[in-house]
Length: 435
Ligand code: ASP
Image 1 (tube, rainbow, N blue to C red):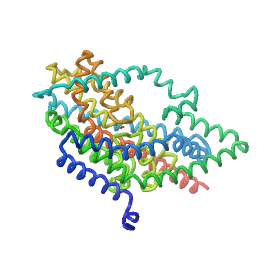
Image 2: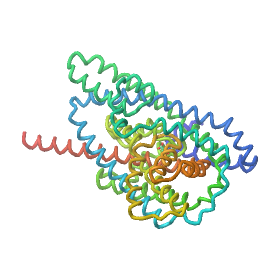
Image 3: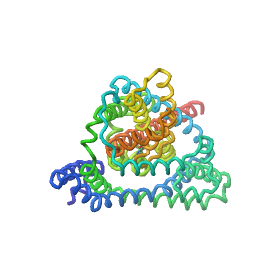
Image 4: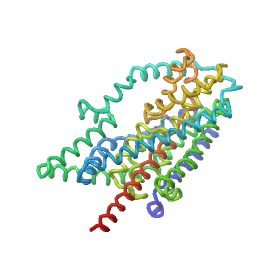
């Protein structure tokens, strides 16, 4: 068994992923969809869920401690502005690429034309309606969302897992420690030590990733409604195709141009996080893995990795942007409505906002599509119909969206880090030159 522990994590995770797929499909072939679904949902999925909970457990303390420690180690807060400007600029760029690709593909391949809709089961429709109601009552207006970035109670933000609130408070607290000078040193050191301990714990939990990924893949492979998916084969193929273009062409270009980074090295370094993203379908749950891969395999500075990737996991969702563009056009075409230039522009804006607002959790993008369809003028019944029809096989689409979302965050974090390092070395050289 020693080869297992000697193998790099990404190789072990890939083995878990492929083995999970094979075992899941075999169980399904052997037992039939219904019994296989019941068996794997009751007995296999909980192991995957336990792994996801273990990582989620780390998110808030890990982000808070490493961000505060990172800011204290920067020595002053001016680097923050540079990180922020670069990160938001590049996030804008990747989202723009995603929207253009998603809309163009939808207009070329017309995923909603000629679709035969299957019968909608009552129970799925009801389930979706309840979930949509919950999502609608939880969603706030844009101003409220912006204001909510400043948590009125940082402890409450931590308890509710409000990542943006935690990031905001951690940055402020780090700055406070710097301002406090001598007086702040003790807590700065304590938080640095907490941060190192949490990082070690993350490493240990990551050793479980191959098993968690295996369990989730067995469950997905044995429960998804592939027959239903065949009715929407165009939508599925176009989503996979466009996401792959975003991952294999758009991100590598950005990495080369802005990060001067080799895409091959990047993908190798990020592969375990990418596999975790694919199997968990949650950017939030993947976040600790994303940060660790950036730091350990790509040499990104920890404070840059944490800050940029954590923000990205909540606001930068290129996979969701692609999906939302496709679904809006799909719904318009399937209901026989014209797709004019005006509608396309409206969808571009809505999909951008929707991708920023979607939660980094399973089905986040699907439930966000309800808000967009409503904004496009679909009635409540029509919205429920579309969401409910896509729901039974959303996981397969969601896995690809999440893979794209996480790869986008890591691309931007790498580019921001490389650009700051270049700037620093230019400064050092000029200073040495003038000295
Ligand atoms: N599940 C995705 C994520 O966590 C969001 C989505 O559904 O598009 O990134």
